[in-house]
Length: 427
Image 1 (cartoon, one colour):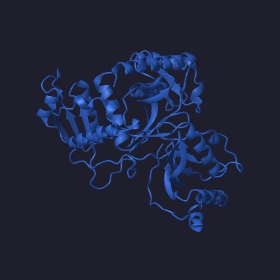
Image 2: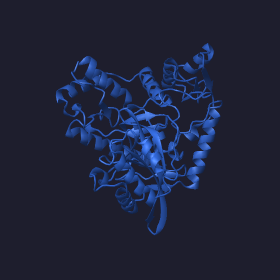
Image 3: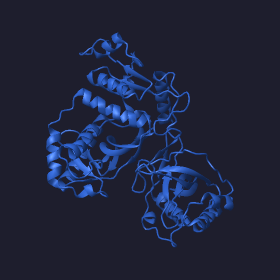
Image 4: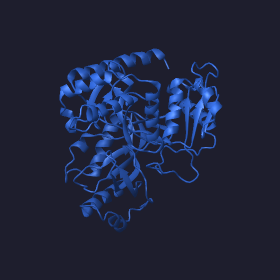
């Protein structure tokens, strides 16, 4: 999960107590919060305090105090300064802070039992938070203790950095005339663009699916320019790329750049959250539609998804905190039977890709079931999971619960199979 900065930064370098107290005007327990933060400043004077807008998973927003800095620790005899960011809720100190790693451009996140792919930090201290015994300083003490057992960040090698720079240089060529997008910046949200920015989407491959994606993206009007990279000019069976060139559609360009060496995204060095596949997005959208509009169920399908992989091993899953977690097996089975009869035509997948592109380009923060890197007992595998998508890619992976025990086993089997195939690639 990332913050969306909509206002001005208010930096309190020397922790001016009265200024902070003034900024916390809407906090329920302002005096207690200030006292807790005064102790943080005394122990860690490097932290920078500010008021920014935080966007929660459900899309709601609040102006919250947060602070960024480093905490010192030792790992295997070496000293490290771990960059972190804490968001203080308006019910502090009776609610725990939201904690994240803040890696620099030369750092990667080491996902483990205490850190997820987005850098969100999970600790027993947070789960058992209880005022007055729980404090931010106590939280930092446990954070250091846990991070000394398992280092949460790693340094990108010079080779990884060079590959990433090479790829970014290539991308700049095929996006000529487009303003660069800082993935750590949150200056745009809800489709707003900075003056002079241009949204340009490039689709690689001039086959039927590539053509369908181009037309669907163009139809949604989410890009100022759509580029189709036709890798094999003249060999496409359908001749769609040639037809697009002949009829000269507005804001569309056909290009021939040899880019096959860049297909190996594993070597790109890009962050995990920026490498995604279409996964089960189309199946999930259909599943939700079937529940609500065909079966006329008296529940919303918006928190029901298809996860895992496409085909016979698809798994229905639900938000465990929602009423859908107890959805009737009969309803699920009926929905799945209807779903099985729906084929995935090129134009259907194209519409799905356009939907994903819309969420990324306009920073919509919509939940999609897309293929993303998942960590588990089977190792690192790309499985389709419900994810919040925005301008930086995958913002957060939503925790789900498979509908039945057999579905959980099917999901594990999919992870094992896919991991085996990935190992054969030897990338």
